[in-house]
Image (spheres, rainbow, N blue to C red):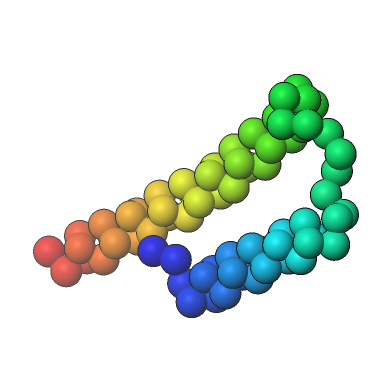
Length: 70
């Protein structure tokens, strides 16, 4: 689950991206630029990997709690 802090950080990042685009600070590369696509995919992969690790640790913690009670 996402904590309240995670949600706030997510909203903050979205706002920063919106502001960046509205100021015209985004790069001029097109959507078919391979370098840009690779950067985007690497970024997404990193974020998903971190989130997956967080969920895995949460599941392990919950399993430990269940085993301790049983």
